[in-house]
Image 1 (cartoon, rainbow, N blue to C red):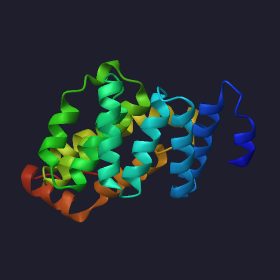
Image 2: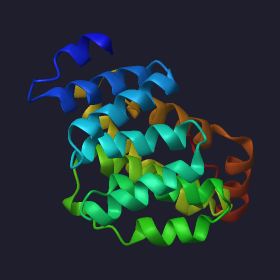
Image 3: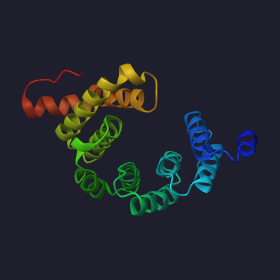
Length: 193
């Protein structure tokens, strides 16, 4: 952080701090990540990516109230940035408000989104329906998320959350309770992807 502080006159200071915060986040160094994202916002208060990354890091580190506050601020300032809706939905799930989360995410027009955020929203919808034990809808959303993610993997192999999405949804597909429920409902067993 000190080396970046010396570059304080750089027009890219906010981007540098945001990048550093992202690196710390991937390394699960949450305190340093939060500090870097906040410095990015000090350098440029209108930097939506830094605010979105801060909100995601706060949610991932179970700082739910702070994540909600950052996401609500982000939605007010950047209403077209659906990363804030996604973080709010994750917080709602953690607070036991799955239906509210599903309603929030279902309002988003997925066709207009970049593939990365689209995959993350589809995956979160799958998690929400799985929480409510609505297996077929969960399966459908996980499958859609995997389809979108599979197209991204060659470009982004081992980057970000895509390997996590594939790993987590494959756990869902192979769960005995899911396969057993589907077998009973449809009289034919489903094969995990």
